[in-house]
Figure 1 (tube, rainbow, N blue to C red):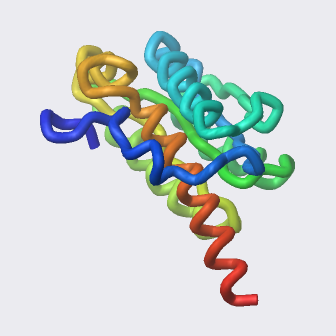
Figure 2: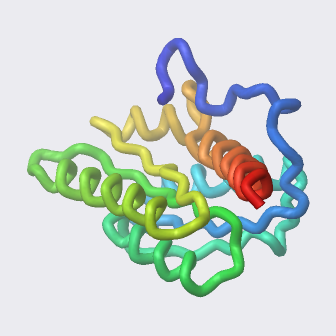
Length: 167
């Protein structure tokens, strides 16, 4: 979470595993595209900085944030990848739509994490206004896409270590 105490793009580079052997899927929402494209760019740049080859990053787009879970499920079922990052942005409006979409995506990503043996990373911004979204998509609080990419790399590494230990 980005606050005055934590920047989304600040992390210890040396504590992130090498991603050169990892394959990533990214599902990005087209809604609030001015924000989601910045998040996507941040995620891809961070993955590549840690060794991921561009050919090992599969990017697909869905119309809105509500559709992220369906997109992630299809990718998990049909693509040979090690982790999926969902990228979206929901800005609070005057109706309860914000609450329904945010809750549905959060619960959906949780369910997918329990259903599949690959990590599904929540890279969705849920903000009260557009300024907060801009601040968290490359602005003064960093980029949530960077954070999501680092999380994906670390969770793939975690999964590989834990699965190897039991065998």
